[in-house]
Image (cartoon, rainbow, N blue to C red; front, side, top):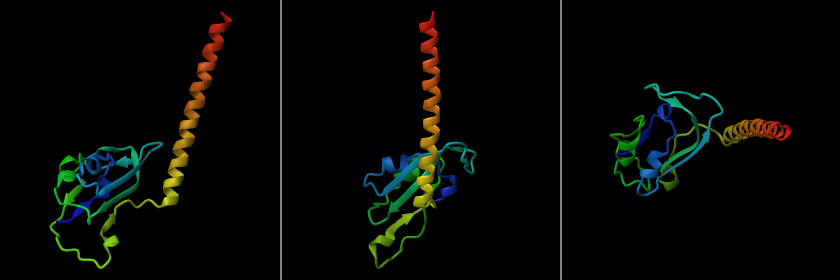
Length: 134
């Protein structure tokens, strides 16, 4: 059978990729700068999927990825014959994020982290100055 992903329910937890014995699942996540949304079961989404690819040419159809998925978004379908003439066509790309969108999300995250660090540094400097006055 073939793997399928209901991408709206994916929280990009990466458990499926970690459990895969043949590394046929490749995921790249980007931390969100704010709320991203909810899955159909109400689980909060906190990560963007810059990449979520499954290489069915490598898949050994063990089903381990479907077992560990906390939102049950990855499943085995009853389709067993997807013949292709080009093996690259067996790489299923589930993420809808373009490289440009992924780069924008990375920039937004970097800016947010820089602002947080600047706030921490300013607070630490102020506390240091307060201690040295006394």
